[in-house]
Length: 448
Image 1 (cartoon, helix red, strand yellow):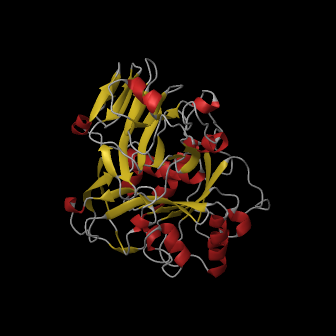
Image 2 (cartoon, helix red, strand yellow):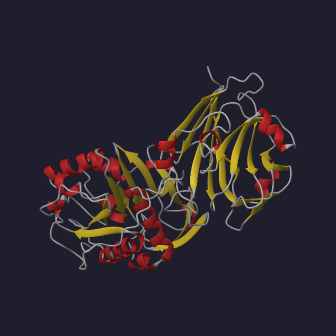
């Protein structure tokens, strides 16, 4: 039952441009769009021009060749027509600057985004089109200024997103670090931020997003502030960061890009944070150096002991190695018997190959997820997924990678979601499921 329709397997077609720049990427059959994913890289500049632009274009072409999407590149704004843009799953603004599109071209691009298109902005894409409000919202923030190129410490805030899942919690790198005119945190999902104490010249008062994603007016938008230097495009970590953003933009990978604010960690990847958790039953979890918990043996459960919860949003990232089984328990009383959670609480299942009421996203044994939505939202084995499990009163809702896939209301008088603990399951030998970044935001009690 696991969907694999999102994974593009086509090889790079003959339309891959071999040169750095081309004339407008328009053809007589521009209204037609094949099943193969296609990306347009746009690098027109009307202000400062980065000498890293050719490196960036070459990198995206290489990433496309290796990952099954075709890449065209142009600096001709005439490519921005409705018919031509429909050929593309995403448009990358590669260090564009200044006013690069006229009113008609802007209108075509707005229509493209509103009909499900995608935008990827790299570095000075934030130094572009200051008088076009739609673009400012799409990019997420405009450039203000920057200090000298220098090393800085980047905090990785979301390690479930395909653009950041390969990174440790801290990413040390050298680039030209932009300050922005506004903070995108309230309207976009921040992926990485700068530690302003690690370098000189940061002016955003200690909250300095540097990469983010968002769903915007019907489309998808990813922006990274990195990519000023030519060396960025030979850095494997930055290349993977850029690839992950493009894969999410074109729909080859799924992620939760809704704004996320007000959560606190229950497990932050450190051994110290595990002091608040206790194993019930056989088996357990191993903690790796990158802050990942992986199940082993069982049937058991690792549960959070300091407090129970009544009204909350729980988020966590999880990954299966193959056809594996696990789940997240909510609403159960404190107990060192894992069957207490089974019999007195509810399990949000992780196992994409079981029957509907016992598969990924189901409330195990009680209610199936919406399987069509689940299949579209689900990343395959080996890639991270993000759950949001929201409990309000006796209502339990589940989001997978930002898509609501289940809405369940408890009517069993022997169970109650209004007061209970949280746990993650280790199902048995051979069921290898990993978890990280377990966080919670407590919500007002229902009726407040």
